[in-house]
Structures are given as structure tokens and as C-alpha cells.
Length: 172
Image (spheres, rainbow, N blue to C red):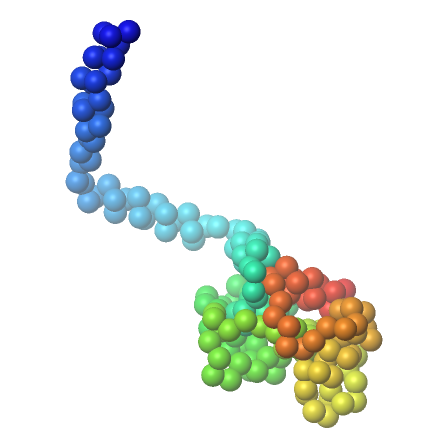
């Protein structure tokens, strides 16, 4: 037992030493090119599924998430490289009003989501929603269509999973 203890005691400093890596920048450049090549051949379905998974796990959905899901449902997601371009396009269609809000940091509310879902899928709108464009009337229309249960508030912030569920209900 004592010999084993001494062996461990003497071998510990040797095991703790780190081997040095060769500093070959050409190897790093080749690896970077290989990663870029893989990214260019990733199927479109994988990119779209990654976007869906990212939305699904968020605790608070953002305006960028709403823009992504709208374009995924319209099969136009891959036309744009960034979320800023996606949100600009969705805003230009009149489906969402961003104003000066940061699409990445601003949580999306239930009212905004419902209004966008109703406009994006050309669902039945109440007369007051057509006249005013207010989110409260979008909530009333969505409750009548069975998209959301009664008793919700337009100012409620929603999760990514809730965003996905609402947009899926509106699509179907």
C-alpha cells in the first residue's frame, strides 16, 4: 500500500503536465474551410428545423421569433439571411408593426401574435379589427375562432412553445 501511495505521489506531477500543441496555422485554416464547406451543403430542411427548435425552447418569444415562424409557414424563410431582413420583409407585408423596437430583445405579446396570425393567414376578422387594427379586437376574433381560450390578455408575454401553438392553430 505504501509503495502504491509513493508511486501515485511521484507520478502526479508528470500526469498534471499538459502536452504542448503544434502551432500550425495551416491546419486551422483547413479545418475552417471544411466547416464552411459543410455549412454550404446543409439541407434547407435542417436549417428550418433548427429555427423551429430554437423558437420552441425559448421562455419568452421575441419579435424575431414571430418573423421566423411567419416566414417558415409561408415557405420564404430561406430567402433571407438575417432576422433583421426577415422582420423588415414581414413588416413590409403589413403583417407586423415593429416600429423602433429591437426584434431580438423585445418580447412579443399575445395580442401582437394573434394580430399577425390573423393577418398572415387571412382569417376571419371582426369589423372592429378591420376598422381599428387594435390587438384587443384580434384577441376577440381569435377567441371566436378557437385559436386561444377565453380570458387571455393582449399584454401577456408568451413563450416560444405558445407562439408555435398559436401559429399552428391559425395555419390549420
